[in-house]
Amino acid sequence: GTPYDREAKSAEAVNVHIDKLLWNVVMCGTPDALYRVITNYTDGFQSRVAVARTPDNTFSELAESPYHLTEQHKAKIQQVAHLLPLMSGDVELPKLEKRGRDWLERIRIETLENDDKTKARQRFRTCPTAMRMTACLMLCRVAEQLIQHHGLQGAETQLKADPTLWQKMLQRQQTPQMLATFDVLADYMIDNAIYFFRERIEEAFRAATYAPADAPRTKKSSNDTIYKQLETNFTSDEAFSLAMSLRGGNVTKVRINSMLYRWERQGMVRRIDRGVYKKTFRLDL
Image (cartoon, rainbow, N blue to C red):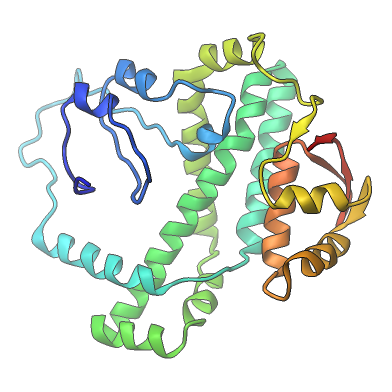
């Protein structure tokens, strides 16, 4: 294939076919190019997209010495990037999760007051993206601290000697400043999503081709086997036990909680109480 950091002309960029995505895609272009790339507004792609706007510099003064990336800056970025692949595994970040839930509730109240259903729906797509981006910043901060204390080689040795070290350090990165960064990212992303996509999202959900939430659901993944065998009302512990019996001992509670979180976001279940859920879909096999 082509290198991940290649630059493509606009016509080539929008017509590219991606068979298997190995890297994040960063696109810089006009709104027209954005709309040609993003054409579906009811699927999960919206929860994988972060759109930024170039600041309007129409009346800005010409800077005498524009900011530029120095070789020292590049070296630091490369060092952090070198350590990130060594941080592999699952981690729970309860403070970040609570901040995400608080943000969702704030946007819910805000949109309830002005009956903005589009923004209310979009908050579920923006929140996980902002949480992922905040977690990435936290991981970079962990790598930076290790380099500062041990140097690049020493940091690499530390991570290889203790594969859980980054998880312990990541917990301490849930600082008020980092959680405030989540709010900034989430607010900025939902504002831009509404700015660029509001009319298109509303048209997509009004279209006759859009499947309503209570429509029968076809089997799509192995998780549907678990979903089918669960009672209408079930607990997270029951889901974990069932998954253990179907998949064996490699199932973790973190993965089950992630599965339940996705089901809740997709409208497949409704949370009745802490750890208690109710199924809302019929499943056609």
